[in-house]
Length: 213
Image (cartoon, rainbow, N blue to C red; front, side, top):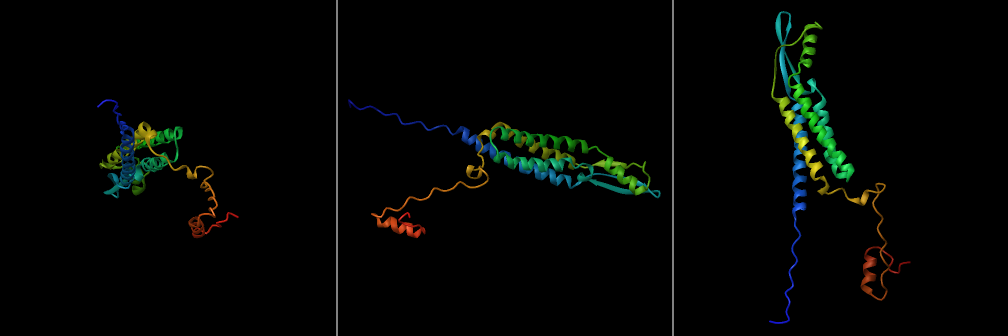
């Protein structure tokens, strides 16, 4: 049929960046929250055990992760705070907070691995139990909990790396409260048209003066 021109239908825009942003955001939130929870849980468990010689007998000693080192728990809290703060900042601020999150995870891993072979906490308990400042713990052994804390640190590190890589695609907090912490003032409604009775009734229902006076 002559004179008819086919109009090409518009192609849908690719949803790749949006989908990637949602996926990476969900992964970072899950990884960061789970990593902080695992680390905090692990530091409250028994990391090492041994014995001290007291009055010719063996006195059992144990040390929790918080006794060995307080660094993993502190960094887990810092990482969790950074994960939340990622959504309160933009551009360079988001990159800086994401870097803090990643460094918190890396520091947690390092501190947990160092604590996996540490005996200082038990040596101090052995000295207190025996009354000898030079006493050290005997039959020293370690549990798997320091390595569980290290896994939590790895999860925090993964969340930080995701934030560094894909944070620009993530949403930020609403700009409604950005200036001075106060919401933006709403524009006053226009006076009702006296020639349209339905607008007068709507204005009265809203508690407004329909005359605009």
